[in-house]
Length: 425
Ligand code: GLC
Image (cartoon, rainbow, N blue to C red; front, top):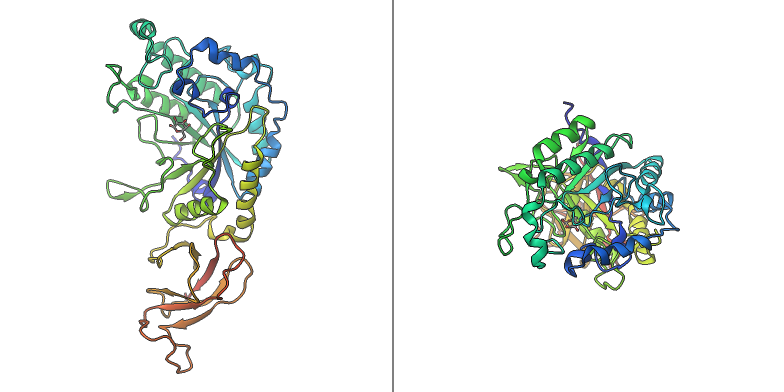
């Protein structure tokens, strides 16, 4: 078996997550079927009206690229069981809706053509499959008749279906770079006697083995309840570089634009571009990747709020890409309200808050040859230990081990200002 190639992943650092499915029609979160305990007949109405006539994956890919993203992971099937590709194993799929096409094929072609790596998110959970037993998340969890039929449901048969579909996805679409399986919950407290599900239910080890056999070099996440190639903290930022058994590991934060993964029309929790950039920077400063999600509409578009956000991120990324791409954590400790990212002999100081005229960099006294703002390449004057190098005491009480940067009073016009420090060799 070929060892997974992590080099592109660690260099790219920033990817697009896409959650798309018929839940874009109710537009009330991708878990709407579970949250509102919707029965199949009522949910399946949405399939009749799913007509994404404005779907233009080339445009999605261009928006992602312009935002500075270099890979994308798209939902082939979410927990509701609806398939966006033309699976031979079900009729519950896009080709049987007014969409009338294999939406995944178009996605893969467009993103590949734009030079982005492509990954598949595939739900282990399935709220449509008749053999998937009701559990704490199932839309029918409180329906006594549905629960009573659980013993007749054959999880083994569902697992065969799951494996068969993953096989299709990893056979029919060329090279796939990431497999994002979601998710396992065998460890959760049973819901009224209904247990969760995990590797024994999915036959997780066998599934991941098949994924690697079909796509040597693919990266697999950690949610099949089997160790994978990277950890996936969701909607929170870890305190430090993530570790397993005291060793730093590869990790990828996943974050939303507004708290929902699927299109959620009335949701008002939109994060500002500044906040999202700080999440991206914070992630890279801790040695991780960021997978940032967009939930396209039922018409097949990124809505205007998402597009504006991506454009604002892209404006910053255009000028600051080299502080992110190929960068990682620094061994130096950043001052308050700052983050460091490091790449070769460059150290990047990201200023989350704007200080008054000076920022003191502990441990960098005597170590920096030159400093400049990254957005405009303008010089930043420096003082070693508070001295100006011409015998003037300058700033009292600053230790010689500090480097002081002389900042303008006015914060420059960059969402997050960055100072590029050229370390002495
Ligand atoms: C979760 C959710 C889900 C979302 C995902 C993204 O496990 O169930 O809706 O797809 O995480 O990380």
